[in-house]
Length: 481
Image 1 (tube, helix red, strand yellow):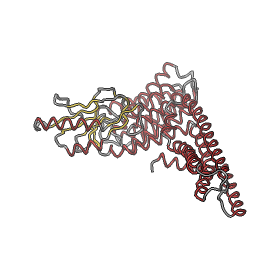
Image 2 (image 1 turned 90 degrees about the horizontal axis):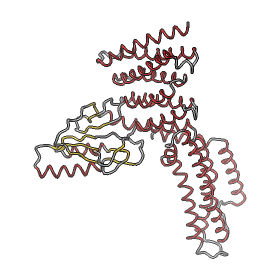
Image 3 (image 1 turned 135 degrees about the vertical axis):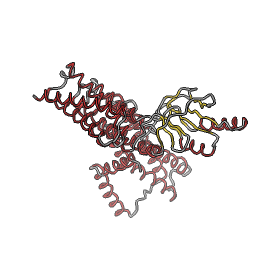
Image 4 (image 1 turned 45 degrees about the vertical axis):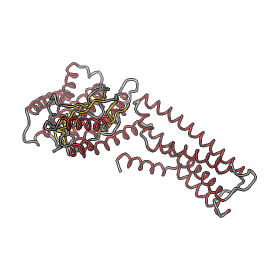
């Protein structure tokens, strides 16, 4: 079971232990004991006319509850989407299994009651007693409606009240993204950094017949096709999942063996082109499937709105940063490939993916830019980068994190020199911020010692951050004095 569904199960069971449900279960147990003691059975007996009235009451009651509850829910979600992100509604309704099951349960029970009313009770005379089968069906409808009204409806209302909370929305997105990371990690283990084959006049291109966002690409099917058709020398994916694809733009490039006869070559080219057209999906929205970048983009959007002057909610922005730090940390633990183009080992399939560099920039750059005068946002950003640095085990990942730290430190020092940040933070806060940034630089420098060799780019970055650390130390001492 994925993280997302384990969390959903835990939350559902936690809500059932609330005081309101304790009262419902207690009163229901007392009522059931009294009914069984006085009557000896739980079946409801009445005439066909009374059963008709019961069905009318249940149908009207359930339909009214569905309309009212979901109208209020849509209004609440609209307000939430305006404050945080317009993608919240799609995430909580179209992509939330529990919400869909609840709506389906109420609507299906309305249809069930209508079937009982018109197909089972209508043929019977109004003043005659119904048969035993009809009594069972009507009782099933009544007790099912009791369950929907007494258990599912209050549980759904509590769940919606929890789901429109900003912290809960951020956590849901993060859990969904972590599930995607865990799935993609299985493919990353089979990939290696590679250079795409040089273009040739013999290359064949598969162009998109639709436009929209690339939602999924079936790599396993393409790998199986390459094993079955050795005449296809390689297949290269031209766009990464999540990118916008225009109609007529190439989505795949492949090359056939020059040793094939002309007829075989033409037939294999046609078959491969038709097959690759079926190996990707394009839609109007981006999806979580294979798209790690999408979840991070959503959390960043919420953080940017939270620190905007209109909302002014830095706590939510810090909450977003905490989960972004966890996502970046999980990418380092799963050893995400750093190459823009990666190749499946021993197979001629070249895949374009979002790089670790792009993920880190997306996660922190915009939040830092819009919160660069906020002490809480700046300090938490440096602390999270420091946490990621301590856990990193790949030199390419360490370089990306060091480059990000270097950019932020340079901007912080520039703000201090130009005295643009002093109007927003106190001298004590500025001293603490300089200390946090210096420790982040020092920890990065210490981490580089774990690697025996460093390339030229790494050495240049090492010298730069070493110099920044000295400047921060001098600034920290001057502010404290």
